[in-house]
Image (cartoon, rainbow, N blue to C red):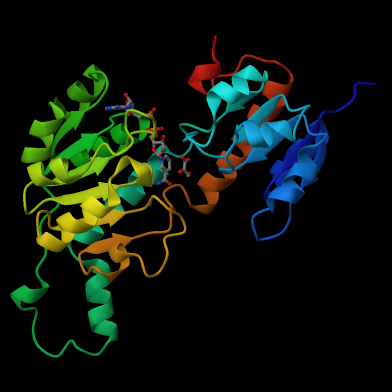
Length: 325
Ligand SMILES: NC(=O)C1=CN([C@@H]2O[C@H](COP(=O)(O)OP(=O)(O)OC[C@H]3O[C@@H](n4cnc5c(N)ncnc54)[C@H](O)[C@@H]3O)[C@@H](O)[C@H]2O)C=CC1
Ligand SMILES: O=C(O)C(=O)CO
């Protein structure tokens, strides 16, 4: 009889995912709503060979308390919480969940674009407050999304799903900046590659969709906001740290850009007294890009399968790129 690997999961699972893992592993799940405290995590990882998490930082400190660990599966496509070098030094591999969430996150990016352009949250508050007493004067006007120019920084899987909606659904002109040219997106959506400064200066909407890496940390700051049109709307659904947040606050306050739609922040949860929360020209969401019930279930199942495959040493397309030989 083969011994099942011991696996720890740090949040509740949909039943089919729990059943799948229970069939293949000795399963230990943190069932509380609150994040598992660090000392409890250390205790639970002491014997674990596999760990499934949604964003816990995996670094030397954590790995120290998990001497038997062989694989970490994150229920996310972003894996900036992995210290890849530390994991490699200890022979721990990492997996993630690309693809299953692309369309859902692209929908949310569009919600941020439409919501900021047409001031949806602000005007909802206006109606609820009972202040809607006169006609729809120009004080309530927004700007058009359809046929505007969209600049996508980070034309990867999600960026392309945004580009498809923009070009085919909204008749937008799509331009992009990326590490490499995307010939297929150029053909399919008429997307044009631009140098970043040119993209910033000529886009009505700038959408940031890169991973967080040393190269993208603070990618958009005061200089970049200064290059954008004063009428531009900035949308970030990548990671908060890709943007210099104080510079974003200044740009929104000074009118250097029109508005921002944000799903991600440097510090999450965003404190209620953060300057971004006091501005009328921001639309703020609690990092819910992939958060539909179906997509989150699909991500959890994929992460579970990734973990089992990694513990078996199987080659998997869902190993994060740095662990592929
Ligand atoms: N808000 C949310 O809930 C979600 C956020 N995300 C974030 O979105 C990111 C992107 O996801 P995918 O599209 O699946 O990744 P991807 O790897 O398919 O695409 C990222 C693109 O960014 C480009 N890129 C990387 N570094 C760059 C740089 N320095 N300059 C210009 N381009 C650069 C790459 O060439 C690639 O085309 C994730 O890493 C994650 O951080 C992903 C899912 C949900
Ligand atoms: O997948 C990710 O990277 C997220 O941010 C949440 O889905």
